[in-house]
Length: 564
Image 1 (cartoon, rainbow, N blue to C red):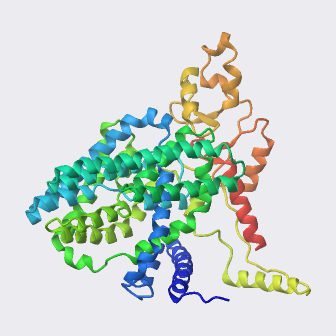
Image 2: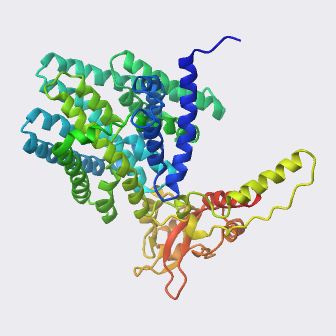
């Protein structure tokens, strides 16, 4: 049997260690309500050259391929949020929020850096990099907590717009400060190649998707396309992240299959995301924090203030809700990924003070990658788009002794001995309050049919609660009921929501068990996917919505935990 070179053996062992340590530290920090991303970064930091030196600086280059593929998968997923119908509805508001936030961040961070350093070029270049929001951190936190709702989908779109503009405009900025007029044409060609490659890849992917029929083949096709586009982008002097961002957007808007391929990626790509963050943790330059000093403090403080204030001002100017004004800036504090690439480009540019610029950005990333995931999590939870059960590290009831006892029982059974009776602690089953989402979409009782059609056309649920102007719950209206009414032209224009309430008033209470919820779903005459969660008392209020699939998932996990 041929021997394997020692370098390849170390690479294989390092990948295994990255996954195991990522799993361990991710679970460890989840127990104290910290996003797992922070644990992955901590695992990489401990594994890397800054602490244990199990992976040396020169060996980190061996993982570039995995990191680039993972970033490609992430940018592809974010590109998938650029749905044409969504952009038509929210596009003006999203671009207004982006413009206000990015300009204020550039101006404030750049101004503070100029006041401290009196170096105009440093202030302009580093201030620009401060505008970037980390796509990888934002996406992985959203996936970890299964966040879902209008704030989540618009946050993803905003991150995509932010990175799109940063990736396109930064080469032009660098050329301008270097006073290289010929470089402007080269930068334009670089951006153009990347976008054309992404567009062509998206059209080709949608076409080929019609020729493959199984999920496995579709997943293989998606990963092949992303890998090919990343490789060709760099081979042609373009940007891999920009090309895959456009690839995702083009695929989503030219395919008849909607989000199916993106869902396959989400279900299969998590090991790549874990390795991506472990590698990022190993690459953290903690020593740079010592050298950045006042410049670093100005960068971190200015960027934090500008992101929060800029998002609030932009959301206010766009007429968005109070939740957006309060929490959007916090959700966009993460800083890594693309920013690291921009900082490395500055370091290799030959500009005067380039190393200082690079050190400022890399040093600040250490801070933002610690607090960024926490701020994203905080914003998503506050906006009511995360189920309570998703905040728990695991369902209660499975102690170490329970697990060992179950394992021993299975070993006995596998060798023909009678299994021992399992005496686990048992567990309290999850209730509606654990699986509901608090971002409620309700309908006023006096809403006309036109208004109802507009609400249902963009609603994420197929059944909505109807409330009085005081907020008291009076019943439900389902899409099936609307569908039946619109064909009766004689009365359609005369009806309001109160007149079209479903015959049976079905709802759940916060403390109701998942078993009971599933029973109610099964007994309904119409097939619906959601039910409102209503507070108990004299004046019932809508406090959340529970999806049938979330209840099924919680029930299955609870049963699996009981059975071991």
